Image (cartoon, rainbow, N blue to C red; front, side, top):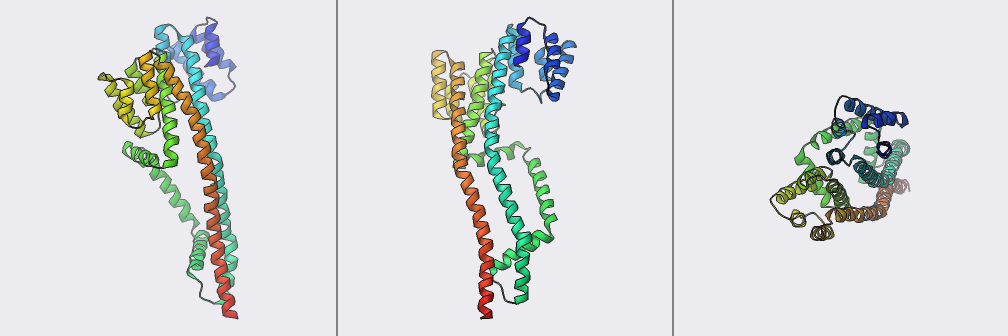
Length: 334
């Protein structure tokens, strides 16, 4: 977007700017996207219509902003804001994804270590226990059964896991299932604050940028609501958009939604009273972006030790079951 803005600032037509942009991009996927835009523009489509036809590459929020810029004769200024919006949105998304990588890797490594113990270490003890012919404790029999199942019937685990993933994905395509999942997530104290801050930030930034670029408020609310990932928040925004159309103030509608923090509601109310709603929405987004980072740090501070302790307990139980059996056998020998 920044490169396209610079080209348009040189008073180039949109199609010529897109043509030059295709020669400047190193990323093949981005170059193909711009090439498709160029073809549609040359066929007579506006830039907004060309972007709307490629909805996988361009969010509806950005398309609406560009359309408003074209209609208002301020396309270059709008593209600058679109670029800033995309950069900020991607930055916070990448921070969330990056924060989850380490716990995920830790879980995979720990699970792999436990699987190695069950499949390669325990079978050696199983032979020794069989030779001793002693009756093993219940905990040892359970661990040995798990080891045999993992060695002999591992394909059942893989098949069952694959089926579970497919079924879960199919079920999660239903709005009712998504709402149930998101409500369950919001009931978890550690996750509730993180999800709320993240969704409020996305909604506020999207709504503020849309209003700033001349998109009508009712349309902006619908588009901003489509940017949130939580079905709970999406449904709440859909309801508050209807109340807003009926004449309620945005702050009042947000308060009645029941899922927006009091700080966000108060800042929106101040924005409505002072005529600086767009600025206040951007301020809300900046505040909650910082809150998301702090919430992620707190979550990692809890999650990493919890995973380490859990996996350590599992390994300790396996070792304890083996040691219990060995002590039992030694007692019989004596």
